[in-house]
Image (cartoon, rainbow, N blue to C red):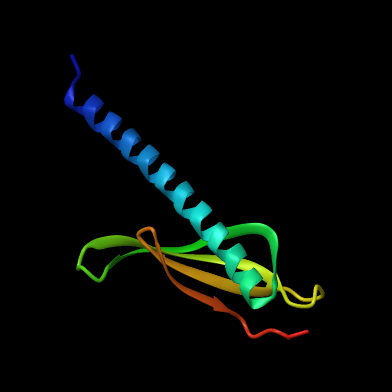
Length: 105
């Protein structure tokens, strides 16, 4: 049968796998939303990617604890300069988009 340390290790591995799957799902959601937002405001998403910059626990509107994540991406308005944008996500819901001040062509 299983010993307690074996069960704890198995539970830890399962939790890490579940977190990783959830993180991949959220990252895909953010990437799609960043592409759509960049298209909407008329800028170009660079490198086709987003990067996790911050991770924290916060409460949602119902008072439940959720993971709060801040993703960063780069965009260009003219094709010459790179600017940063950020997406804040609480749980699996996008809370906020922000773009650095940039030139408008």
